[in-house]
Image 1 (cartoon, helix red, strand yellow):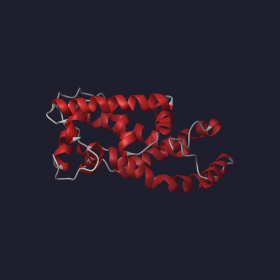
Image 2 (cartoon, helix red, strand yellow):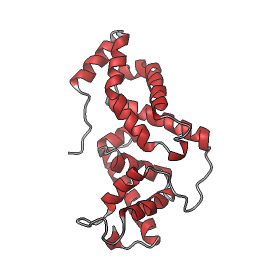
Image 3 (cartoon, rainbow, N blue to C red):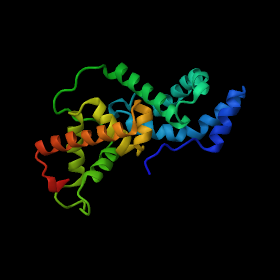
Length: 210
């Protein structure tokens, strides 16, 4: 079912305690979400930055930013705490990328430097139902073609594919993050997939290989 997963009862309890001035409650609260954030950052971090950027440091920066912005969040709790933390961590990643790689436009055909495991995950989803790794196209070869195709997509399309296909978020959760209705998130994701398929076809893949 495509819906937003609400905060757990424990998370709600800790948020209430934070709102009542319990400083230690936030540390316990963040600790419940640290692993989730660490996995997200590790998935989205550009491999070119890995020698210089430790995902744990990004999570720590996100924690400090969350502490600063927490009073504002507690006033209205506009989204589940987990998604709010994810949004903060993602914003930190974008700032780090701009700092290290600048905002130069991507050259046509540039390969997006996603981790192999991540690109193969999406490649497997694009393979025809029931196909085997050896049928039509090796998964690693398709993963390489996929990274090249992603490099030609607009940033917004690539982000939607990451949110839906890599992180497994529902359209309602994506809508929270992007500030749009779930139906709009679904339509945008569908259009992003169409554009991705088109680029892959232009690169020489046949429909039977997807």
